[in-house]
Length: 101
Figure 1 (cartoon, helix red, strand yellow):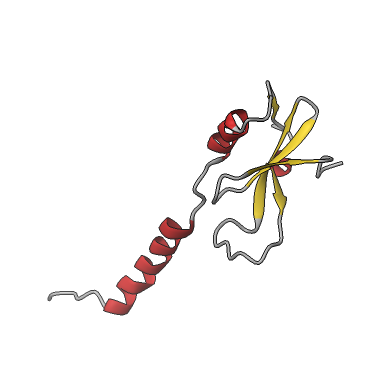
Figure 2 (cartoon, rainbow, N blue to C red):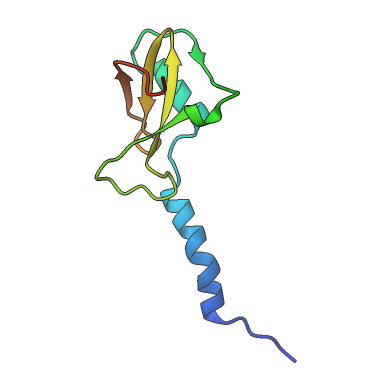
């Protein structure tokens, strides 16, 4: 007896995989950290909140559609200054004050 895989079952597994591949962040947290160093801002050492990992990203609400990124940007503290990095575009922005108080 020969078993056939139904096309709907194949589609059920392939579509989420394709969505993840096409909409995952372009930059990882570590790559975003490197972008801050290379951004032209004069920075030396990034502070990482290892005990409070939720502080490594901040919620951002924009008109852009961001699947699998959950509308969050990477957040870094460097030399008492604060930066956000967009995980899709790699754009680095300095903030006037920290997001997390």
